[in-house]
Image (cartoon, rainbow over all chains, first blue to last red; front, side):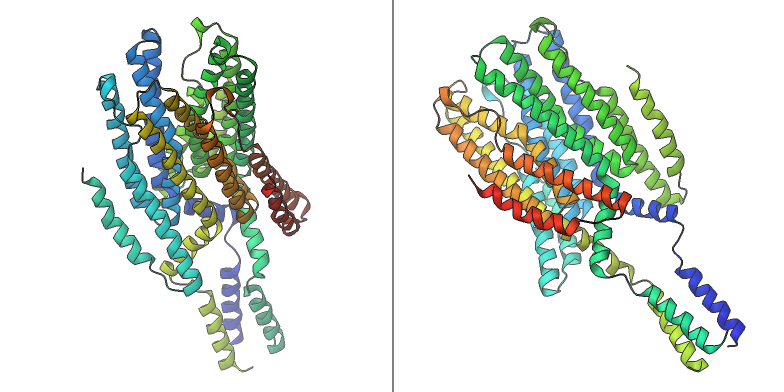
Length: 183
Length: 183
Length: 183
């Protein structure tokens, strides 16, 4: 290698070392963030649509009838029970998605939304003496909480013992989500 | 270029390659996170202040009067309607801010807070027979949801087709926020 | 340094420049995210457990007695007040944890949960004429809001003036959390 060649390769080296144009880096960074959360965002959007659907049911019942009828009370109560549990659900789903992996968390979220829809419709159809209970979707919330616990336990294992079981854990989690489909 | 010069430039090269001291990197990292969310955090703080303002209204009405008066029922109902919609709003605003860009999302959030304030005050002033409906701020929530959808669609386009329209989309979004100002 | 040595050192340089294997980088990235939020996630999980505990109290009261008794109304009202304030608490705690530092935010969160537990139990034990007010945990929420404000102010200082007081601020914050323990 002669000096011209050396200079050229040095030039190439420093060209590689100069950071990519800043705008591009920021776009890549932003996309990296979106990459890790886009499934969670989609589930959140679907849940927001469902909330609006519930709220419109309440709104319609509120306008059509007097506010003291049994139908209004039932739809209002069903909506309130769903709304009471909503922040809990969102918090657990996002924690599980961030701590372990987003695909199983988003899948469990979808199942929770289906359960919630069934609960709401069931609440409206029942007579007032046999309304379903206050709680619903206990299994999904438990599953998501376990995902959080496992994710944090894995992080602490990596930090203090240096052993990373994340791949195994993710595989097991993905298999375990199938259990949620059992009615 | 002689060998001393070469050595010097190599030394400079490797000096550039050594990472910055760790503490500094962490501070920069932390600031990078804050950079992407600080407008959202400010809007969240303002919304928390508003929540506290609403809650104090309820508290005062609760203490001054008997809990069965019409004024208490109205302020309590207005507060509950606002609180029911609050997690939905927070979730959509943060998703829109993370997926697309924070400035329009924060601006829409501010407009939502103004709409909510008007709704609350309007609820208190009305007679019980002409209370406003259960829903409010539909336009802002729709706008924020659309921002999420566009952000995710852009991410998927980048991932599968390699074409990035983020800059155009951000410009259009910033122009579109002006439409929210139309009463 | 002769040419062989130079080539070798150039080779070493370019070896340092090749990125680490992608899977490993992603695992490290994911763990870096978890590192910054794991205390917040733990507090969120504890709060979810507490929510479930509250909800089960409501569920049990709902099934055992008629829904019009005083005991049911009291437990239902306590639960609703706690749930109304829950999204506010979560939002402020996460903002404070992300903007400033997670350990004091998580500690304040734990104290809030203790206050909430006391509030709930106190609500059940009271006769209906001396129920505690609608608000609780004002001090913790104020503290967390101040943490957010300080974090954002520090970020803006770094951005516009280049002076970083984060270390001092974190030390002061950690000392100030002790003040929350005063009853």
